[in-house]
Image (cartoon, rainbow, N blue to C red):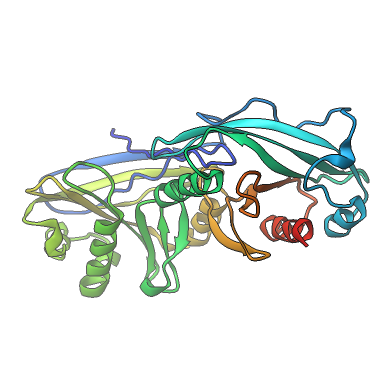
Length: 338
């Protein structure tokens, strides 16, 4: 059984992504299968050398970027204890770039028994080439391309990019489309072209109990070249407690590129969307502007380019914080920069 996977390290939060290898079909002369499992988030090449911890170091009022405790408590919704926070990280991304940095600032932890903590720090030093913000954003954007998830409204109300795959709900069936270039690397542009072609010319075919792989192959756009062979393929996608067994067609082309169009029962759609969004292996990236400055949020931290030498860095964690922690981090950044 073959297993295809892609891994990436989300820049600020140490994420490794292993994504679904998709498969399925009926008719043809090839048969493949694949298995993909998404487990709990694991540390890989990004390590914290001095995790966000508190110390008894004096001079807390002199630390940069530390707003008044009362103002932070208003945003967190409860009393907090403010203590120094400092540490450092070594970060790598899916493009092979890496750099080290350290930070310093303040930690605010809820003290009423609730689970919640935010760290408001500034990058103190780094060994990235050029701007820390530019290097950090470039890294997370590269990982987001490989392992992020975003809606594709132009393909329909229920359509997503999941890493380099296209996943669409069509007439009660989940349709997975993936493609590989002649270098055997996943190709989002090719997957997008194949999905658009299949949906436009044969959406009915992909919902049939037995797909005709030759007909599916005939729908491949010209960019794939000459179709060499088709065949059935199947696999399994496991994300935490969710298991999906797609099946469908594998398409091979003379130039070495390939594609897969597989389906699974549509009643698993909502569960799949929720599992993908909640997975620690799905890379998040949102470009922002905060108080007139460039910023981005990676799902764990917001970085604001307000100071080229010491950009603002805010992290949050805890089940009792605002459910929309990205918005909480943004409001904390606005508080600091007000």
